[in-house]
Length: 436
Image (cartoon, rainbow, N blue to C red; front, side, top):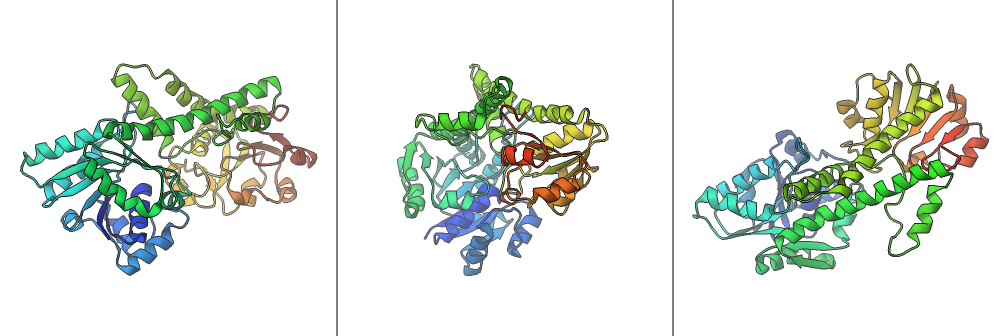
């Protein structure tokens, strides 16, 4: 049993802390947000993530998981301190390191015994050295022994608990082999493949991984756009590509683009790092541009379908950036809604989990509905933006009767175009040849 402190209670921090406590460790999760910590101590979850609430409740009740805003309390007995705070995009795409810096200064100020500092946040290459320099400078050399280890996270929102408990790989980077070995012991019960590198290589692995996945999505979206021009079907194209094990089938689903808390900021940050070190990130910039263009293409398609957008009523299903999360950060649906409201379209929308988040960020004129069928009442068009499971088996006869005009834009290629066309809908997908 180890004594672990996790700084930050967002997706990464809360999942990391909860899962380590579920493995039998004593964990304190710290956050400067007093309301969030108060809610967690009362069993109120700040995020929706399948399986997480049950683990938090179980470990908190057993006394293995605690929540605090007090740094001295959190660090008093800590052997490991995981930094899992946000690194949002700055004005030029760079990673904003202010939250990391605040956490490191607090660690330095309250450290009175040897600890291992673990960078769990997604941070620029060189951050491990930077963290060590801050502590050395702040303490002026008068401090207990410490080591810094990079341990990038590979958690997918919507399956973060499963990803932690059954990881495809664990990456550790440090200039201190003993420190890596000790962090590796924390993960030993998971029996996962482990890669140990120097600290800068570990930091780079995270950025390179997310940038490559984003590139696959932007690539298939560009292929989908070409398919629409030449009359090919991108679903079959992707299937044919994916059967080649050098390519693989994952992340080859054409749609309206990627979003969330990781891909957008990480691709931008890697591009910024490249420029900062004197290289030209041409591919990364294209990946970003294609993704943004894909959202505008949705608006252009709706404009063509409806012969103009002003005054047209459009229902939108799905607001979170992906299924099984309430996260709307960089959500394609949110961008599309802003484009549409700027064109004076009337928007009604529904999402199974993201409605509270939607109230905070969507234009006030957007009407948020209680179910999918309210969304389509008297609508001129229906847009599927997020492919939640509950949207797979909708009553399309009822939808047909409720809609004023029978136009469907399937932004995730979830539904059967032939069936919907036979029912009398005008169906448009993404990269589906004649259904454009």
